[in-house]
Image (tube, rainbow, N blue to C red; front, side, top):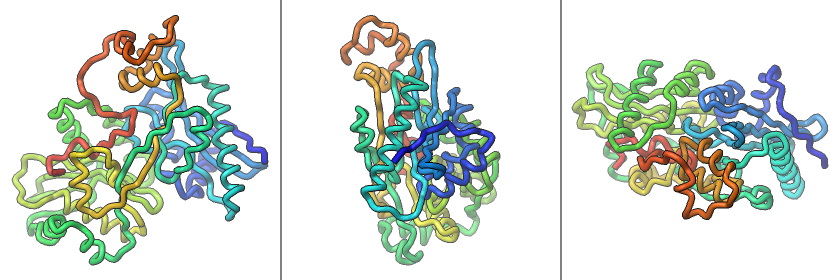
Amino acid sequence: MTIHIQEFDETRRDEWDRYVERSGDASLFHQYRALELQAAHSNSTLHPLVGFHNEQPIGLYPIFEIQKGPVSTAFSPPPNIGVPYLGPVMITTDPIKRRKLERRRNQFIEGCADWIDREISPAYTHLRVGDYYTDMRAFQWGGCVVTPKYTYNVDLTPDDDELLLSFSRNARRNIRDGIESSATISVGGRDELETILSLVEGRYEEQDLAFDVPPEFVCDLYDELPDGQVRPYVYERDGEFVSGIIVIQYGTTVSRWMGGVRTEESCNADVNDLIDWQIICDAKADGCVRYDLVGANNRRLNRYKGKYNPELVTFYQIEHGSLPVRAAAHLYKGRLGEGLATLAESRRVLAPRRMLAAIPSLTTTPRSDSLTGGVFSDANSKDNR
């Protein structure tokens, strides 16, 4: 079997989106316009790779090149824009035997890796793929370092009563007894989206964390993607904004992307449980089968998310590069390019313990872990206890 890898022609963007729809694994961030926005807001160059067997498309692999001086890096998704997962996805075809499927998938990944090495020659490559892609062998055989990460998924297939009964007693009580006559939960518009983002950014600042997600990126997604894919859920009391959660929905998955920060508006109800339940009910009505809580790596917040009886799901971070370069990437985060350039220009290989001295102007301010799958609903909720 021969698989041909090529960079997709942007003039055929509608065809790319049809492949995304056929994948069954892709998210809204794989759509062509979403890829363009990721490139624009991360100052990167998009390379939308597609693999063909004869004329049949078998996989998509969006990769983003970031060039800093003499150093090239490759990401999927790009850093510091809050996209939980991206990376390669296979395109659904007629059922085939596992042996043939594995051979096709491995050849696709290897072909894309060869293209990236030949056309970009990155000093460092970083991918985060969702739980739709669990066979990491092709990456490991290619010399990548694979690290498991975790999220929580709520199964939405049971009926409402059965699903609610599976929640913790505290969550059930909050949902059944929490709605006040003067309160409403609804899907807001762009103004409410901006309010939620402002509150999230403020919560990060209170915790001495850097909120790296450009609000303009989230707003552009809301403005330019199909209606309903980005939705700001809002809890209001007596017409005043109390809290909100931004969700993203594509296919049969709805995801709790960011939010959950309350204003100082007085309210006795556990508003986040109520918003989450409304999101779940609406998602079930839309035919969704799972609610991705986007993250289970924060011990402090796992207790809150665990109230919904979720399944623990593994996804993966994939890195390629020398040990010093990988260490620089993790230390430097937001100023990755400058740190890598310093290393690339060095005439000697630095041991990990000497990395700090090799990277200029490294601050000690804690930052959101946007290179390693930091989850943006994890660090911003007063109610998530």
